[in-house]
Every structure is written in structure tokens, then in C-alpha cells.
Length: 334
Image 1 (cartoon, rainbow, N blue to C red):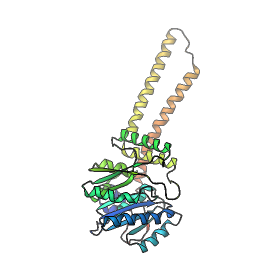
Image 2 (spheres, helix red, strand yellow; image 1 turned 90 degrees about the vertical axis):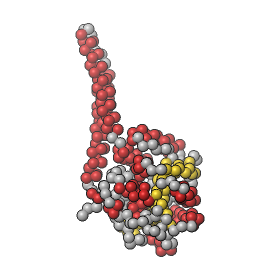
Image 3 (cartoon, one colour; image 1 turned 45 degrees about the horizontal axis):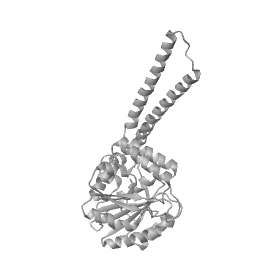
């Protein structure tokens, strides 16, 4: 039987989420795509951070279809370090799919997600756990990235979060990322959501649990370059908005009403000029107006098409991730 009908609405077992282990207090989940150069330093840094906590922890690292030896390194690390659990996806499912795979496998009472490039400093982990122990169900982070991120990236990030907050009604602060801590009860609810577009940071904010915030300074990448190209960021942003809000469809209605009003004004002007016996000049302006109206029409059709495409993807019943290999025999597919 397909697991997807359950995946969208029901039991946690649809994601293969294991029961919480009483031996694990903190799970750290990390998606990794072609991060072999960073993983050794990452694991060493996390080992030092969790040793400071003095509590049983696990480090779940998900290889998202890498081609640079990431999986071999993870496999070897899991043999040497009992904290490390490696998952290898059958192909590249994207950052959010890999993150969901790791979250579904995590067994701790508190679950921290972070990136593999060391821009999310492992030294921040104990601060997140202290906030959780003080009663926060969600501990989000806000990055300070002046001098690290380009002005263009900081500008587009602020614009995206502003637009997302306006269109969805879910407040999102600039500088948020998937570096956060979730209480087990919050993660259980997160895994029950039915969103096709995996925008996990938006889903966490939508849940509305008691939240604490920790600010941190972004570290330089340990190695390599960012995997988020401009086209990927655009697809990510578009999917996030469409997944959370129908407002773009309503925007199409208002655009149609506005352009229809402009067209009515032009028709009225033409009729008045004709009744006065005057020829209405402006073939070029008429052509430009028609082109503008067709442009608006195609924009509205494109918005409708984007929503229909999401419905089509949901009906295909495809899992958000497929685990091909694991160093933990209890791990199962999405």
C-alpha cells in the first residue's frame, strides 16, 4: 500500500518516524549535499558542543544524493563515532526533502536542525538547548551576516520574508533559517502537516508554539560554495508562497478588475470623441494598451497554472524522500 495517503494526514509512521528513544535527549539533523570537505570539521565541532551538554545525543547527517564522496565519509564516521547516524537518499531531493528525512529519523526529545557548511556554528548548540530547558518549545535563530552574505542576498532575503509575511499572514523575520531547535511534541505535529512544498521554517511558524530566539554571527563557509543558486532560490520562494497562501490568486482578480477599469475608461473616451466628430488618434497607444492587457492576462494564467501544478504533484503521490542506505537499520523511507 502506498504510504502517501497516510503521509498527508495521518500517522507519523507514514514518514517512518521511530518512537522516541529514552536514551537520546538531543538529536542534531543535518542535510548534506557535496559537503565531504566540511563533514570532518563539522562532526568534530558538534562532538565538542554536545560533550558540553553532558547528555546522550545523536548526530543524524543526510546525504542528499552527493557525488563527492560524502556518503563514504559518513559511513566511515558512523563506524568510528557512535553518535553519528548516516542516511543516504536515492537521489537529490533538495535541502528541505533531506532535512525532512533526517527529522523523521531523529529520536531525541529535542531536535536541532542545521546546515553542513559550518555557517551555523556548532558552538551555538548548547545555547539552543538551554533555551529549550528553560521552557521554549521552539528555539529559532536569527543570523547576523554582514560581511559574509552579499548585499544582494541580504536584500532579497528581506524582501522575500516581507512578501511572505504579507501574503500568508505568518510573521517571518529577516535572517531566519532552518537552524533551530524543536521540542519532540512540535516535531510530531510538524510531521503531520500536509504541505506539498516543503518550506519547513514557515510550517514551524504556522504551528504557533511558544518560541525563543537566539541571534548568532554567521561563520564563513568551511569549504566549497553555496548550493542555492538564484534559480533555486526563486523556485524555493515561489513554492513557499503558493504552499501557504491563496492570495496570489486573489491578486489576479484585482489585476483583472483594475485593467478592466482602464479598458472601460479608454472605451468611454473613444465613444465621447466619436460623438464629437473627432478621430481618436493613437494607434501606438492602443497597441501598447492591448499588449499590456494581454501581459496581465498571461500573468494571471501563470499564477493559476502554478497552483494547478501543485495539485498535480500532490495527486502523483510521490514520497518527499527515499532512503537508499543507512547506517541505522531502523531507518525507513518517506
